[in-house]
Structures are given as structure tokens and as C-alpha cells.
Length: 228
Image 1 (cartoon, rainbow, N blue to C red):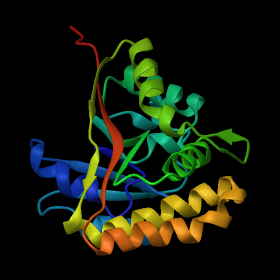
Image 2 (tube, rainbow, N blue to C red):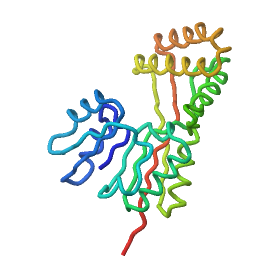
Image 3 (cartoon, rainbow, N blue to C red):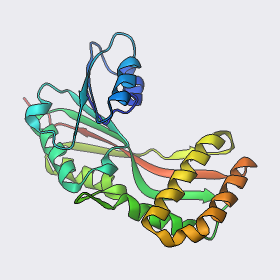
């Protein structure tokens, strides 16, 4: 199992016990400290190796021997060309791909605030920004990946996997709100004038247990064609 952008290893902790044994995981990330945590937190009886470095250029030769490619919250950080290469490599090798938690651009906050649409639109644009000449897919990631894997002959299943946050999730709502507003202001600086008051209104509502947030995400499973 090759886990791309493994972070602290949450995918391995969730998926390993759902797959047959024996298993060997290759954990990819740019951050050696995160890799150390991921290696230490895999379930017992699962072997693993760390892989430090860029994971956007993986090809079929590098994927040789892989049964499953996994990733969580990664697709929206890739470009259309990088997703195309990943789909082509998985198809050539004949491995499955489980790509979870790609943002869809859907955010529903209740009760509503007049500035919700402005911050949501700015955040989506931030997710689609160009970084070092790479235009990120952002909310377009799931449909772009489904199309790419389909073009390479793989069977694709997509399913919604929204975050549903309510009164019991106060600390997570606060963390999400601060990051969401900061990214929106980074992309559209004019929003900074309203950001402090907007954020305070939202945080106050969350502290009172009144705020509910649904953040749209999509999961994608791509399965190779059956070969005789």
C-alpha cells in the first residue's frame, strides 16, 4: 500500500485493519517529522518504509509492485497534469486508488451570515491558486480525477464524505474557521476589513453551541480493469 502525503498516518490507522494481511506500507511525505509519527502509529503487525520527497511525479516504474495507492486531502493540491500522470500510472500497474477527502467547494454554515458567500468564494479561489507555476485543482479535483481514471480504463466510484460539525465540535470548528477565513483573506485582501468582525461573530456563535458547519468533501475509489 502506497500512502501519498501520509501526514501523521491517519489513513494507515483507519485502513490497515480493513485490508487483508500481510501488508507493507510505503509512506510518502515531504516532512520527515510527520513521517516519523506515521511510522510509529501504524497498527501492530503492519510493516512500513518512509519515503521523503516530492510525490507528484510518480510513474508506473515507481509504482511497480503496488496493490493500492491511497491519499487523504491530497487531490485538491495537485494539478490536472499530475492527476493525469497518477491515473495513467495506476492503470498501467493495475493497482487500485483510494483518494479520500477532496474539497468540493460546498460550505454550509448555519445560522447564515451575509458575508458567508464572499468568504466561501474567496476560499475556493485560493484553493485553485497557482503556486510556482502549478495551478491547483482545488474544488475541481474529484471530478477531474474521476475523468482521468475513467479515461485510463478504470472503474470509478465517487461518494460524498462531508464534515458535519456541530456543538460538540467547538475546538475543531474554531480551527477550521480561522484557517478558512485566513485563506480567503490571503486570496482577497479586501476581505480583511470585515474578517475580524465576521470571525468573531462566528466564534461567538460556536462558543454558544449555536453554529453548525457542513464542509463538502468527496471520496474516490478507482479500480483497475480485470485482466485475464
